[in-house]
Length: 178
Image 1 (cartoon, rainbow, N blue to C red):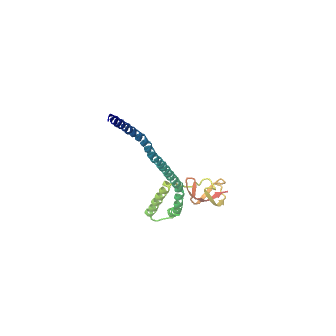
Image 2 (spheres, one colour):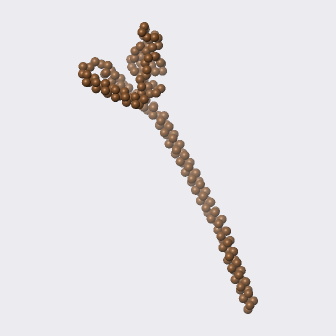
Image 3 (cartoon, rainbow, N blue to C red):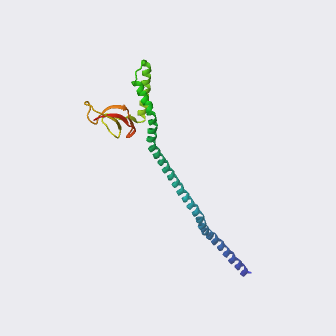
């Protein structure tokens, strides 16, 4: 019987040793499983983060590109619209040059003309200078003999020219001294 007790005690000790060894093994075996489960999640998170960064960069580039295109188009659009209003300005100038018996009426037209010119100046529109003839800003419709003016100087202006910056909206129609 004592042999049986000794065998039972030995078996109990073996079982205890096995149970003590098993948690250690399962603990070490469980760690690689956690790492393998977290690694795909980390990879996916990194991919999503990279995709987000690329999308944000693309949007930022798009925003900058459209702002640049808008800034480049603005002068052309302004020039086109202002060009359509130049005949109105010409009509106001002719109305001011005409004789009028009613001074208050003429004063009203002058005020409208002044307001219109101020608005054009705010948009960057200015009259083309008419001292020296420049073929890039003037259209010579007549050459005249003049003792009062040097050759190449503008004698008279038939229609004012206008520009925005360096872009000519309408050439000034002038007569030039020979």
